[in-house]
Amino acid sequence: MVQVIAHKGVVSEAPENSLEAFRAVIDLGIDGFETDVHMTKDGVPVLNHGYTLDSSSDGSGCISDLTFDEISEMELRSVGHHAERAVDIASLDDCLENIKGCTVDLDLKTPLKTGTPYIDEVCNVISDSGREDVLITSFDHSMLGRIRDLLPDNPIGAIMLPTFDEIDDILDILKGCYPEDVPLDRLSPDDISPLEDISFVDEFLGVKGMKPLDLFLNAGSMLGTIYPGKTFHEVSSAIAAQTDVASYIRDLGSDPDYVVCHYLSCFLDDDLIHEIHSMGKNVIVWTVDRFDIADKLAAKGADGIITNDPIGLKNHLAQSLPISH
Image 1 (cartoon, one colour):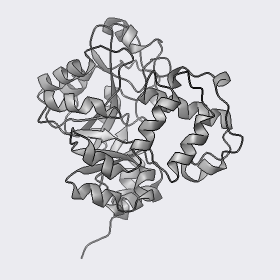
Image 2: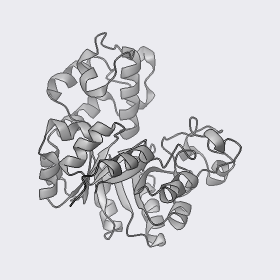
Image 3: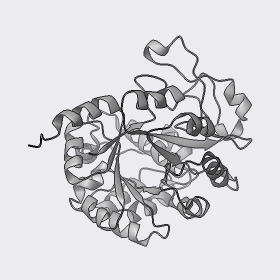
């Protein structure tokens, strides 16, 4: 049966990326969770979705500019009935020490500051934990070879960008919407010249009713977290290179154990999951919250599905399994 992987933990039970949200994964019988790893100014890997703490905590600032002691004074924003509880930002060490018995998928982020020993520090923590079951993934595929050298017994995975038809034509159009000299992670609304008609992306992104400027800002922000310091013109070549997922993975020297595909890619190429399996690799799909799409991906043979609704999806898949006689 396909594994259900909770994006940031079970966020309906506790703040995202907290130890409590990860414990809920185990308590509720979810198969695993995905979380993002960043490093403090003094070299401590911590878990948070973004590079800054502004939206996830009662504090602010870029993680790489703060010490672990400074971050320890902050509290994660609480949800629901957890509002009265103080919840600390988790270190990777605490997570690996205390959360066991489920799949742990660590998404390593490209450091904002070049020259930092980010990969080495993260791999040291994983190595010291003795957790050879931890899956290490990244959008930044240049990291994977170094991770493989440092942790040869841990599985690694390449996270792929979304792919879609007529990619070259669409990228040429989009290049006219973004500036050539402003990195995506520093965009302001004044930097963007959005298309007024965004109906061409609605069929695969589901953005009906969204303002064009908001769509382009959100897309730029997402790509900016994957490729900090890069302009859209620089990133577009990386997007185009990943259009043929199977060929790209074959040529990737790090030989990942997992391919973490956007769900759209699995529908544009009906044989993609089968083809990746034939290469001896597992397939995890991100990020799926619609049960009908999850059903189709499970039928195609996906090994894991990352979702923001792990409780609902786990229950749905359990009920939709065919009964054998």
